[in-house]
Length: 316
Length: 316
Image 1 (cartoon, rainbow over the protein chains, first blue to last red):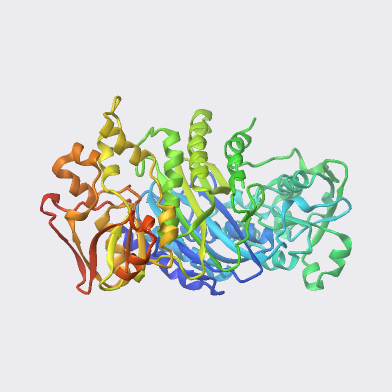
Image 2 (cartoon, rainbow over the protein chains, first blue to last red):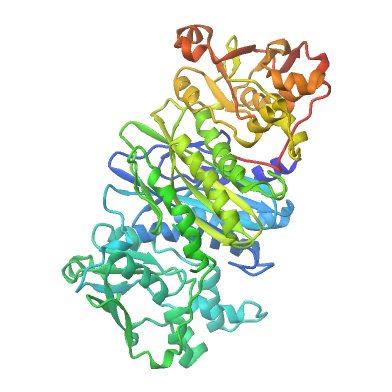
């Protein structure tokens, strides 16, 4: 069996997971074909993960399979889109069956969990680099963009922050405690906020997923919208595990560490009150949009200096 | 200016090239948004180029800019699709302005020539790796697939073959002859057959672009369609430059060398006769589809043993 066949064997099964019938031609031709239902916009994003930059060397391949797809799908959640299909461009130093089996197992689990099918890909020999492009759809004109925040609106997040950042200290723990396990699972198995994103399409005024840290990512909304914001650090949701592990450092991680993949969004107060209570209950209000440019955080004395995190640059 | 801004500066201008108004949100948000006209299918393909595998080390960045987009767009031509937009995932060891200026210049020229706009991207620090995903559209149900070839149909190609393969011998020529320049420009500036592909959508029964060599790529059509073919080597179009440079080796290159990005297609004889003469005149009939499985080439004694070319494996 050639390397070509070996790789096909691992990834072809993921082509059968298209739930919505939109993927009318999957892997195996010059291109794949997607047919959108009438009245839907195509929403898409590309993400690259490089070993040693975005994940540690020798990171377990099954975690990487989940994580690489989850991180990409999180961009669909941030637009309020429903996932449809993805492509995988994989550079590998060599086709190692054990690595491929683990990676494709994690990828298949994520593909099942998020309802997204593989549409095509390209594998090349090279240093370990994973590029995933995800496709979703959203009702025409209702995608959540970064530019829609308006003065007076509420700033919300969809869940506790800082756990994934705390996990970096315990990646090599051979016998992690329960609290350590809790934050590690946030790092290894991020959950894109697809249901919440879709429920907020056309209702929230802007959204972004928190990949580089709350302050850094909210700043993108503020810049795109030409507004500022005032946050209250006391309202930032922190998990019990994070507080138990990190004490006074917890808030700093919640403000500035990346990799949590919760959403940060803005919404008018009356729109917030009109949301289904089941959706509203998953949102935590942490501040308000202001006409005064810049981002101010009250009650953040314990957080220490801001630590940004930049993977070199991204322009989509 | 940070590296992030540096890179944005080079690639953001390519976002303004969307000719068809389908790209309703380009780079700068979590995702891009494409709105398809009613009755069109989305057609997409991803390609990765790795330095030292798909192009020589220190290959001039302006050539690479053109080539990387042309090779990807060629897959749209092979489906009969019109280009719309593309994403660029670029890993670079460091953000070198001279390289970025050359690469983005070649990319912009190709983007103009093919009418395709950048929709988003991701840049990461890492070994030089370029992943491009191209999007096009085609009338619903009319995309050219590999699986449609039927017994008795004519096998055609859209232009001379083997030039790009011959060019590999002259990449380092400091003063190439006119014939050498002719084949070098086929290698450096491949021209995807977009107009012919679009004219053949719904008329040809199958198509593929010749990236790995005629025999190897036609074999993909034969396998997908469950048929065989008989070719006549005397009918394979060869450029004067190729024959002058390579003499008796020309046919072997035309049959087995890659990188030409002409199309190979199958079409029923009556459909061929119905084509506009301006389209038909650009096609060369080189053989016929047979019920007998396998690929046979008459008059190929001079071609020597078949040389396949496999970049490690591709599964879309």
